[in-house]
Amino acid sequence: SSVGRAVIDVTQGPNQRPLAIGEVFAIPEDSVLDTRSLDSLLANDVDPDGQTLTLVILSQPPSGQLEDLGAGHVRYTPARDVTGSIRFDYAVSDGELESLPVQVEILLLPVNDAPQAQPDLYSLAPGVSPLVLDSAAGVLANDHDPDGDTLLVTLIQPPSSGTLNLSLDGGLIYTPAEPRPPSDGFTYRVTDPAGLSADAPVQILLNGQPVGDQLFQSGFESVP
Image 1: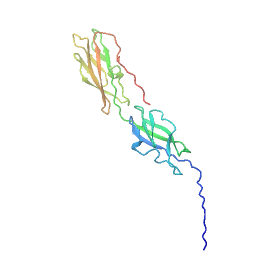
Image 2: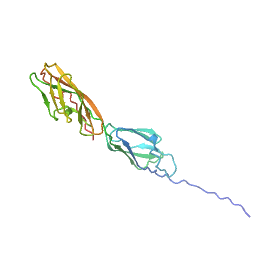
Image 3: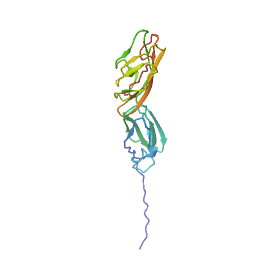
Image 4: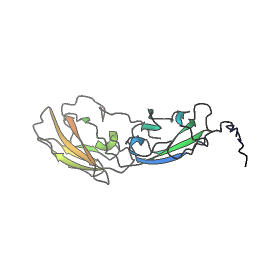
């Protein structure tokens, strides 16, 4: 018998584009997403040629901060009090070709936020009594709940000398003691339906010095 030798020429085909697959994450409002505690974004992406893939971030989310941590991992820190859907685009690369862009969606789930109570300053002219404020002009007028919840008012520390009738809706009737001191005050608490609360002081000038109601008002930024 004769022995022959065959030569097989193996030619590698052209490099193929990798395939990236989008992701969806859900985290509570005001918390941080760090994928190092999860699978990397590369875990479900594919390279047909078996090459190692790297992450390429193509766009930044519209709010918050996105960081590339390497090895396919990212950390996203949302802006405060933002809820809803946040997205950014990425691709994967095998060193020569990039995949088509895909999207990562991060669902920021709403959580209850504590109300914010602001100090109040009122003035009562000499000879005028009592001080009467309805709910629109009462202690809640410059307070705020980030979730838009209805707030209830309770008295924490009563006036030093006068008498006070404080309503749940923030309206009040204050009658100063006689002879009148230069000023009086009290502390109240606002509480939301979930039980979160905040306290604020109220000062009442009794010498007739002209001031506007809610002198210490603060503005609040709307939440998208």
